[in-house]
Amino acid sequence: MLVPYLLFLAVVMFACTAFHRLSARLGVPALLAFMFLGMLFGSDGLLKVAFEDYAFADQVSTVALLFIMFYGGFGTNWRAARPAAAPAIVLSSLGTILTAVLTGLFCHLALGMRLLEGLLCGAVLGSTDAASVFSILRARKLALKENTDSLLEVESGSNDPFAYMLTAVLLTAMESGITPGSVARLLAGQLLFGLAFGFGVGAAALWLLRRLHIGASGFDTIFVVAVALLSYAAPAALGGNGFLSVYITGILLGNGDIRNKATLVPFFDGVTSMMQMVLFFLLGLLSFPSQMPTVLGPAVAIALFLTFAARPAAVFLLMAPFGGSMGRRLLVSFSGLRGAASIVFAVMTVISPVSTDNDLFHIVFLIVLFSISLQGSLLPWAARRLGMIDEGGNVLRTFTDYVDEAPVQFIQFTVPLAHPWCGRAVRELVLPPGALLISLQRGEEQIVPGGGTRLQRGDRLILAALEPEGTPGVCLSEKTVEPDDLRDGARVADLPLRAGALIVLVQRGEEYLIPRGDTELQPGDLLVINSTEQE
Image (cartoon, rainbow, N blue to C red; front, side):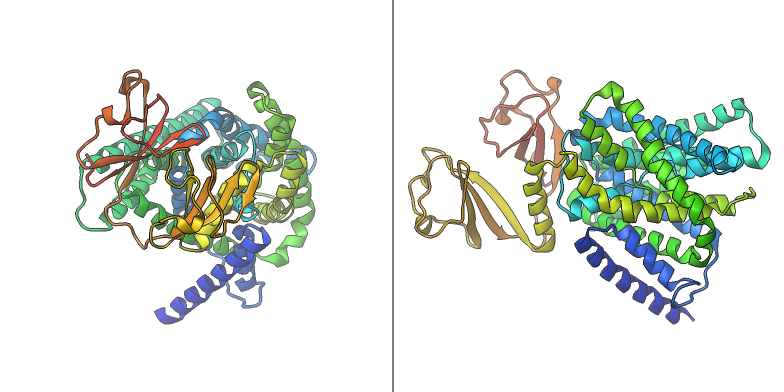
């Protein structure tokens, strides 16, 4: 009996993988491809797989969102995101609430929904989807000016907990009634337990990972998985916001000095991709396209109001104190794509005891399809028209994507005056085995060097080499230099490091330095350290 299910699962995974490659080439988020694939398999699709178990879908979706949000926090470079953190957090909290209220009032006044049901619809649609935005930007190799990409990353990663809280409050109000005092207690419990467990579990896990050497290979990964599960389940069991907790824990671990991060990143990248695949396919499988025409009108009306009225109103009002260009505000307004979280919260409305007059699940499903397919497809065009493309960021994104496709690493080197290579022809250089000089930038001129090309002072060289399959003896961690860490004029050699540790890179703002013992350090420098042992 088990074998047919395993065969079906294998076919679905192969199909999702193929759709992912196709969506990346077309610049369409994988979310859309996976959802359409689920619809193709579903009750109204070609394969007629009957599936209407909303309760099971809710449980699977919760686990999937748990890991997606943990890795969303884990992968956020807080140092890079810090300049945009304040407006991002304001948008993820107050912006989510304001967008939900405006959308809910529109549903009530324009579409005739009951007030609480309209507000419930707005709450379900309150959060934006980070995966959709960044899959488009990455597929088109676009970087955004004014830290807009970091702002969108933090906002989209952190607004799901607030949409979840609003949804929970409104479902409680519709089921048994609610008073202002009980609303305050419910929200306070959600926030306090979510914040306390997020910071508490994250800090405790960091302390343990720095001091315990977990012997067998892979058990540190198992430990971090357990941390993610605990950081969600513990506050949720006490009425707290597990999604907020797991996101904060992910940020703390991802930005902390922990062992084997190079192993954890690809593991959680794979797990998160699997969870996204399962989540989006399952939601597509759960839908009934034959029921969508009856809710098409309200869905389109809500989608248009949400995209062109509610979201821009919230963004322009809340971002005004933080400044920034008009192009930035318009692009942030247009980048509020709705995604899987909205559909997951819509599933909550189906399995709750609350009775609604409208098919909120399919209304939200259609709005997400509209947002991803039309709004998402136009996002690169909007970024270009608004002048928000960071052309300087394109090169780095291209190199990163290329390394993802082929086992190649790139090394940058500028030729100083006294260097032995200065004045030599390329054919005379002694390069490490397996390395190749592939590019040379001389002033504004880009040169593909030949054997007779002679190097000059100031030439910027790009060398390529094969990426190793695993790097024994390399265990990288990061540390930010604080003002109290060193005296004025302190050098790398003066910094106390544990035995077996070596600083291999210094990031100073936008500048990267390969350090020597006499390299002076400054507060705010980000040190990349290779070590054989952790404290």
